[in-house]
Image (cartoon, rainbow, N blue to C red; front, side, top):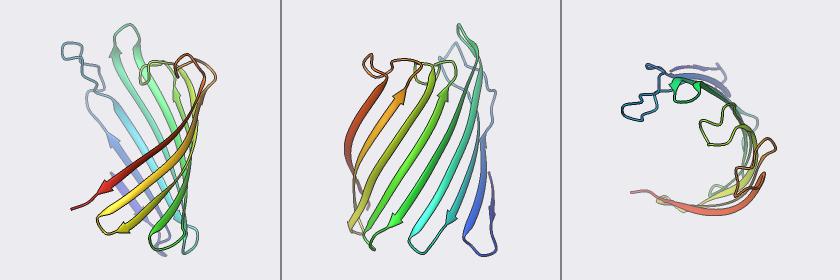
Length: 157
C-alpha cells in the first residue's frame, strides 16, 4: 500500500492492493482474487469526517464463469456528537457483475446509519439500521430488498 497525507493533515489518500495469482484454485476451492482499493479521507470540521472507498476486484479461472469481476463505492460521513458518541451514515454501491461474490448478480445499494457509544475505554456499543437493495436479482429470501436493525459490541483488553 501507498499513502499520501496532505500537509495540513486534513486529507489522505491510500492505495492498497492484494496481488497474487488472481486465479481460482479449483483443487483447493480457494479464492485468489486481485483487489485494488483506493481510500480518500477528509476531516471537514473538528467533529465531521468524510471518507470514500473505491474498490475493484477480479479473479480468473472461476468454474463455469471464467473471469469474475466486482466493484464497490462506499461513502462514510461521521459526526462526533460527544467524546463518547459517534454517529455514522454509510452509502454503498456494490456491483457483483457475475454473481460470483454474493451468489446473485447485480448492483447492490445500501444505506446504513448507526452509533458508536464508548462508555469506557474497553467497551464500544454499536446499534445500526440498514436497508439493502438489488433490483437486478432477488438475493434476500427471494426479495429485492432487506431492512435490518443490528447491534454489536466490542470489548477491548
